[in-house]
Image (cartoon, rainbow, N blue to C red; front, side):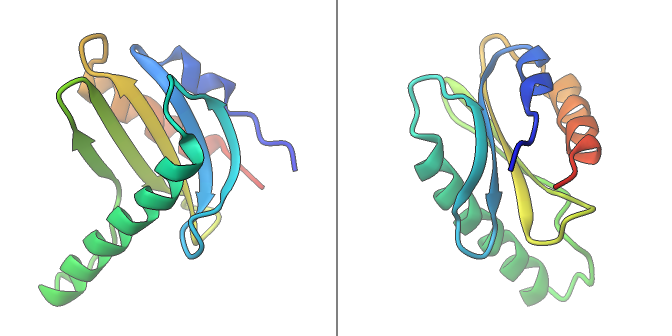
Length: 117
């Protein structure tokens, strides 16, 4: 399987990106890494998504998760489900000091919508 994540590197502050299976947490492909184990990030990202889905269901929001954004002292993680491939998610990690969160979210959404398996 060859999936091009190279556009992710155009996002300001880009450190790494990967696609992963939300059920298993297994990484399907990756780009960069920024010194972080993207496979572990993918697995843990799937757990964060499951928690957000459970929150929405528990609150009976009747809506789906568009994205999960987590900010750390030095990094930002954005996880988006692929709209055209249910159960598959895009994970993007950014350097917080260089990223512009609003623009990054738009770029990650555009990247997600362009990906096909």
